[in-house]
Amino acid sequence: MAIQVRSFRPSDSEFITSLITRFTEFDLPAWRSADEINYTNHSLLLQAMAQPEPDSALLIAEDETGRRAGFIHLQTQTDYFNGEKHGYISDLAVDQAFEGQGVGGLLLETAEAWSRAKGYDLLTLYVFAGNRRAQRLYEKHGFGPELIKYVKKISE
Image (tube, rainbow, N blue to C red):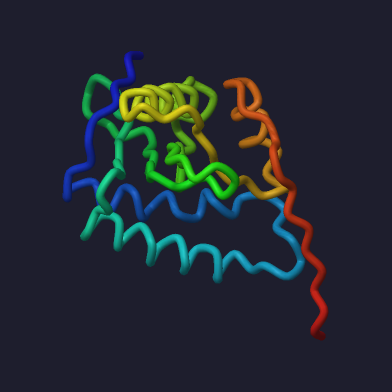
């Protein structure tokens, strides 16, 4: 099966929103709820589809029949330490029917090529500590941890 990556089209909106729950299919921290994460991701992705930011990209992976397999949302961010712009993977999701078939890796390779074409030296992302499946994918493709955010819930 050949997977290709193309630019977002408005007709992809329903597919993208159908994958939002993929971002919470693992053990979440006790202080986070799937509802709040899904609501926020839904709102931000609707905004990204309706009004794309400059220097961003929303890309769709699909098979040779046009069946959508996954998506990636790329943004440009500025490094805190050196002030240089870099590529940032805001969202990446693969449809369960295509899981384990290289779609996530292809989307990561596309993100790397997008960042390289923009002249960026870094490509970054965030991943929940409990999302081991995503961490394994990222590590397989050369990503490694840089900063670790610690959280302590202080209100009851």
